[in-house]
Image (cartoon, rainbow, N blue to C red):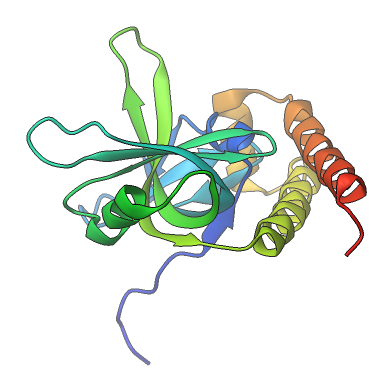
Amino acid sequence: MSNAPTREVARRAFASEFNDAEFTFKESDDERAPLYALLPTGERANRVFVVGTLTETEDIGEDSEYWRGRVVDPTGTFFVYAGQYQPDAASALRELETPTYVAVVGKPRTFETDDGSVNVSLRPESITPVSEATRDRWVVETAERTMERLEAFDEEGNEYAERARAEYGEDVSEYRQAVLGALEDFDAEAEAAPDA
């Protein structure tokens, strides 16, 4: 067996939950240990997979290119930042037309502002244009993964749920509502679409 490090599974989360994942931690003192964001529904995420509509891109760099993108899902907005250390993602943000559906795999990042609030964003590994069908499938699968986390939230021995309760509180009902809202939006879109 190889001792090569394996990549972490990219977790699926809706923007409403991802943007609340302000608590980050490492599971060892090794300087190369992965940094995890703790999702409020009780899962650690070193990488996330999101799909939504890229609605806006902007080069906000001062001395060199540093791109910000807004990716919108049915529950909110992901902010994606890419610069010289993410050349492929920066190139995608520079070149893609908006609005367009995109899939983003990236690492959660937190930043504490001067007023003490915490902004959560994604540092993308990849940004890929995708079809509406791919976006739709992501919404359904993300709803399923979120509901699985919610169902396991109160299970004894669920260490990440215990941490989430300590960091964010017991009430996860807003994430259940976000799932239901996302699926309702999805159903409404499907009903409004003309028959093919």
